[in-house]
Image (cartoon, rainbow, N blue to C red; front, side):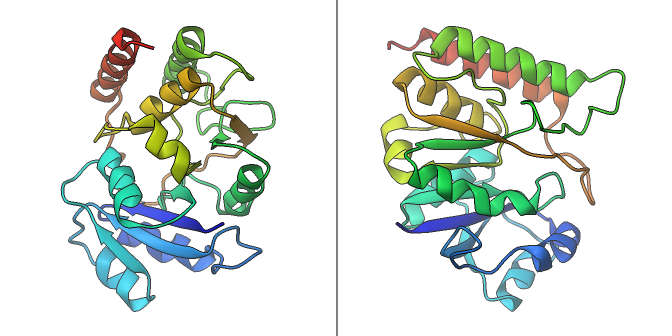
Length: 232
C-alpha cells in the first residue's frame, strides 16, 4: 500500500525553513513512502526550497486549499494521502500515526484538536471563538449526516489522511477552505470508517492566517447547507 505525504504550501518559505528539516524521511518509521509538495503559486522561494531538497512538486492549476487536495488526487498515484500544512500548527510527531489506522481499515483519519487528550491553540484563552465555531460545525455535521460510528470531534481540521478509494467515492469538488468539511460530511453520510486521534495544535510560525474567520465561517455554513440539500 503506497502512502504519500502531501505538503500544502502557498508562500511558506519562512515556516518551511523551520519545519521541513524535522519532517522524517520516507520509510517504514515515517508512515509514508513518498513526499510531494502541492503548491498554489508561491513566489517567495518556496518552490526553490523544495527543489533544493529534491521534493517533487505538483503545481495547482488555480489557487485554493480544496484545489490542492483535488490536484493531489488527480496527479499523484497513491493508495493513501496524508495532508500536512508546514505552518507550525500541525504536530510533526503525529505524521507516523495515520498509516496504522488506514491499515486497520479506516477510510478517513483525522488528527483531532477537540477530543480528550488533544490541545487546541485557543485552549489557554478564556474566550475561544474559533474553537467554539468549530465545535458548532462538528455538531451540525454529526446531527445531520452521521449514520454510524463514533461522533466526529474535529470535522474541519486539515491534518488528515484519506484513502484514494474513499476520495473517489466522495466525488469532492470544493476548491477552497471548505474541502475538509465537505469531505467529513460526505464520509459521514456514506457511513465511512472515520477514525480520530488526539493532536496538539501549535502556533503559526510566520506570516498571517490566510483564512479570515468571518468570511470563512460563512463559506462553511454555505457548504453545510449545500450538503444538507443534496439527496442522500
